[in-house]
Length: 444
Ligand SMILES: *Cc1c(COP(=O)(O)O)cnc(C)c1O
Image (tube, rainbow, N blue to C red; front, top):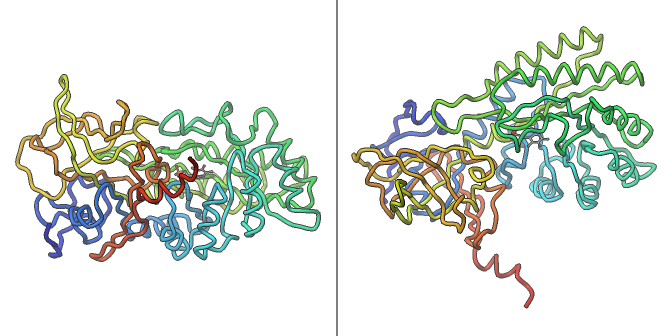
C-alpha cells in the first residue's frame, strides 16, 4: 500500500456518521482517519490492530467540559485505558474513575494526580484499598456495608479519607439487561427503597476518619434518553433531603455516573449531551430549591462516549465461504479482542477499506477466528459481493469495552493500539507476543 497524504476531503456521508470527525475518503474505497489511511496502518502494524483518533478523544473531552462547565467530568477508565489516554485526560482537565489497583497504578505512574481520581467497585480487594490509600486517591465510593468498617480500619484512627456512597435509585435504563445497574436486584450499590443506603450512611457518619462528600449512582450503560437521568436526580435529591432531616447533613457533591449512549451504526441514536446537561442542571436546581437544599456540585463519569467513537478495529479477511444460506467472512480477530457481540448481542457496521469495489453489495456475516460458533463480529451486514481473503475490514466505534475486555482466548495475543493525529500514526500499546504469553507460564 502506498502512502496517500493528499489533502483529504472530509466526508459527510451518512455511512460515515459514526466515524471520527477526521474521517475522510481521499480516494474511493480508501478511508483515512487523523490524516492516515487505515490500510496503511493495517499494513504497518499488522492486524488485528486498534486505531485511536487522538483528536476525537480530546474533542469529546472538550464537548463534555463545554456542556458541563460547572461539573467535574471523570473519564471511566474501564472503557479503555493506556498511558496516552491517562495523559490526554489530564491535559483535557478530566478526572478519572478507576475500579482496580491496576487502573489506579497505571494512571498514577503516568503522572495523573491521584486526588482527581475516584475508586469504584462492588468488591474492592484488600490490594485495591491499600493502593488507593497509599497513593492518596481523591474519593472512594462505598458499595457495601462491610466495606465501611474495613475502610475505616485501613485508614486508621488518625487518618482521613473522602468517600461517597453508591446508591441504587431504582431506575431501569441501559442498552442491555447485562449493563443495567440502576435497579434493585443487581450487584451494585445500596438500595434506597429497602433502607440499606440510609443505614450505610449512618454507619459512615459514625466513622470520624471517613468524610462523606456525596451520593453516587450509575444507572447503566448505553442510555440514549435523558429521562432516566432526570428521574435519578429527583430520587437522589429526595434522599439528600431526608439525610438533612435525619442527620442535619448537607452533602456538597452529587455523582450521576456515566452511561451516555452512542451510535454504533449509521442512523442509531446517541444521547444528546447538550440537552442532558441543560435538563439535568434545571432538574437539579428545581429539586434542590423545592427541598431547600443548596445545589451540590455535579460529577459525571462518561466512559463509552469518550473512547468508543474514537476507536477503529482493523482486520484482515482470512476466509470467505458459504454455509447453508449464509455467506461468512472470517477475519483474523474476533471475540478475544471484542467480546461485546457475544456478551450483549450488539451490532456493528464494518467496511471494506484499502480498495475500491464496484461489486454489488452482498449480505454477509462477519465472524472471528475463535473456536466458538458465537464468535460473530457483525451478523447480517452488507459488504461488497467480491469480498475476498486478503481484504481489510474496518469496524468503527471500537474504542470502548473492546480491548479493555480482551481475553487470552486461543492464545492469539491481544492486538496493539496505534494513535493517529495530524497525518501520523504511532504505537501506544504493542501487540501481545507469544513471548509475553510464554513468560507468564512458569510451571511444568
Ligand atoms: C462503567 C461505569 C461508568 C461508565 O459507563 P459508560 O457507559 O462507559 O459511560 C461510570 N461510572 C461507573 C461507576 C461505572 O461502573
